[in-house]
Structure formats: structure tokens, C-alpha cells
Length: 113
Length: 118
Image 1 (cartoon, each protein chain N blue to C red):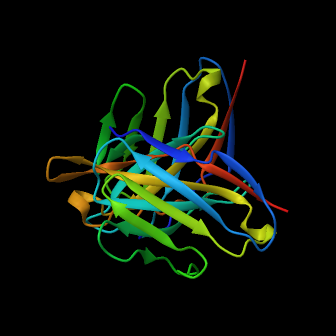
Image 2 (cartoon, rainbow over the protein chains, first blue to last red):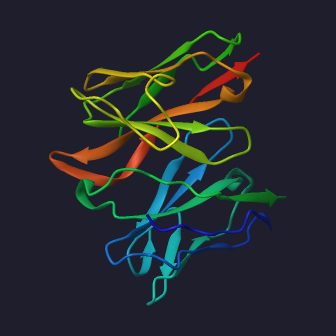
Image 3 (tube, one colour):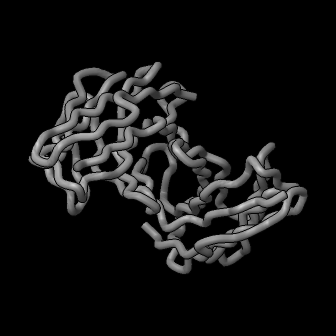
């Protein structure tokens, strides 16, 4: 499973767009990129997953360049409630090929008023 | 989606004792996972538990220390044995997401059990 590198922490203000970048230089052909969010005293929660280009859902967007060696999670107009740790994971999760999630260090996003 | 509950939510235990953590899911799932999250750290996978078979442990984790039971498709327990202060962590279970026979790519996590060992 590819190792990921992401910033330890980021600060933002309410209403701003936040972009969190994750590096995964050794990503394999069959690997997908998945992001989870974890609030204090809770288990992680799935946010978004993608393979290439751009994926968007009601919560976030995920941008993946052509070489797939990095990815960027974009959170539009953050609020105080978006303060959490965001984890980038890379692995072959198709149809149960492997269900193991290997968490990296994560990025602590602190949103201020 | 799956709703997962864990018991206890927290406990304080004495050194040398054991704690058994229960994980209950509101639907039948084939695979359940147990994680440890030490204070201020990321999650580390302890083991994978399939119903009807022995759990598969990750490097650094052994069955004698972390015995797991998986008696049916909605329930699992993790026991942390011979407790030491280094075992103070949050322990979380998770399940894969399925649509019929197809496994989707996200997992659902329980709220965690906070263990403090004195």
C-alpha cells in the first residue's frame, strides 16, 4: 500500500476554501485515493474517493493530476464545524481486493471565526 | 450505511487486568476491523475479523494480547489482555460497506472505546 504524506496541520477562517494536498509518489495502477474526516471523540468518516481527474460530491471535491502522484481535497467555504483531522489513504479498494485501511498522519484543520 | 455501537464507551482499568470491548452492527457484515488510536496519533489496524474464521493480525499485534471473537455477522469483541499503561488508547471497530454481493469502497467506524490504564 502506497505511503502518503500530508501537512500536519492547517489553519483557515470561516468562509474560505481550503485545499489539503496529499503526496503519494508510489501509487500503483490499481490504487484509489480516499479521504476520511475525523472529529474529536468520533470514528473517521468517509468523505470522498477518486481514481483520476476530478470528483465532486456534496461535501468536497477531489482533484487528481494525470500522474496521480498527488491529490488535493478541496473544502468549499469552511465553517467552524469543519475543524477535524483529514486523512488521505491510498490503496486498491475495488470490490474487496483489499479492505484494509492504512492511515497516515492526517492533517489537522483548524477553522477560526 | 451501517450503524455501529461500541461498549463500553470508556473505561479505566488497573495494570494486569483485561478489558473486553464489544462492537455491534445493525446489519450483517462479512468483515470487521479493529483499530487502535493512541493519544494524538493516527489509527493503526490491529486485526481483521471474518465471521467463522480466525482473525488476521497485523504486524506487531498478537492473538495472546488482543484475542478477538466473531460469533456472528453483526457482532465482534476485542479483548486487550494483561493491560499496561502503554495500552491506553482509543479502540475502534469498523465494517466494510456492502450493496448486496458488492463491497463498496468505504468503511463505517464505531464511536470508539477510550481505555485508560493506571
